[in-house]
Amino acid sequence: MRHALLLLATALCMTAVPAHAIVGGTDTSSFGQVASGVQIAPNWVLTARHLTYTVGSSYSNGYGSASVAAVYDAGAGSYPFADLTLLRLDTAINAPAIELNASALPGGTGYAIDATIVTGHNQVPRGYAFTTVREFQSLIDPDGDGPLGPVEANYLITYPTGYGAPYVEGGDSGGALFLGHVLDANAPLWGISSAQIYDEDEQGNKSDFASGFVQVASYRSWIDSTMMADTTDAELASWTVTGVVPEPGTWALLAIGLMGLRLRRARRAASAAQQPRKPPSRSTPSTWCGLGNARRAPSAPSHSRRPAPALPPMLGEPRPAGCDAARNTR
Image (cartoon, rainbow, N blue to C red; front, side):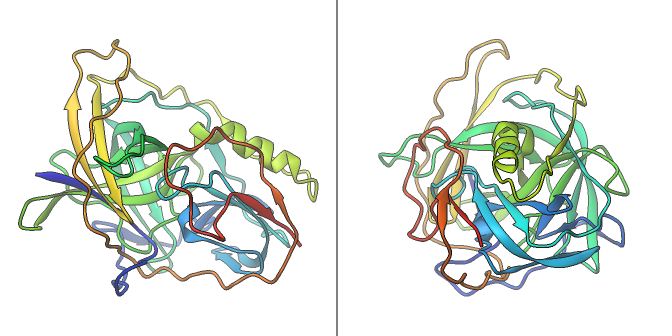
């Protein structure tokens, strides 16, 4: 059995598959701040980097819409490295404030923490589902047995007992993971939807579906410094310390081999939670493929570009031309 991870938004090498609602999800009119990105301040949206928003594209949620005035990527490497982007909107959307969870979950498995998946793209007008965070994995290997080393992904991985629904599907990227089983956005934002994860046997049969969300607390310094450096407005993210950081029952290391948009993941457990993490083993890389039908942002007009706040060097492939970590302004 091999473990695979799929990009939720764009298909680079095959016909896009029609998107569906959260498997096991329920329609809701709540969570209006959530769409293909989560509004965290009047002029700021946190979304998945692989959605490739550009200056001049439009962002809409349950409270309004606005054009994107600036784009800040958390990293410059290939997916799934640092799959976060901050968007500054040219006009404010009047929406209730959302707090971000400042308590970072340590790496490992054996967790059982209540959480709520929310999508603003595939259900009408939005969808939610109760789930459980079971793992946090900070590193994955983007090319299996290839020459590249592990890259930073910082995934909260959710699935119920026995795996299966609820889990995200194509088009859900940029959605939210909230702490707790909640019915509205009056709860800490814990993660941004990035990947569907599943097991696949040698015949290509899929099972044991799960979901991967980028933990926002892992990027707190980048979020704060990026918003502070943009002097167009004085808005900052609002953080709350939840204290939901229990020790994992056991450590598990995941090896995820990426070829394009799909990764295989192999697990192996270490002896105790107190042991230091070891570099993940590597699995055989899979073939190129993709999933999703999320819209691509329109090409931006020519604008000045200035570097975003610096991040540690990436251990992986360079991102395709035009997707570098830079700041678009107008």
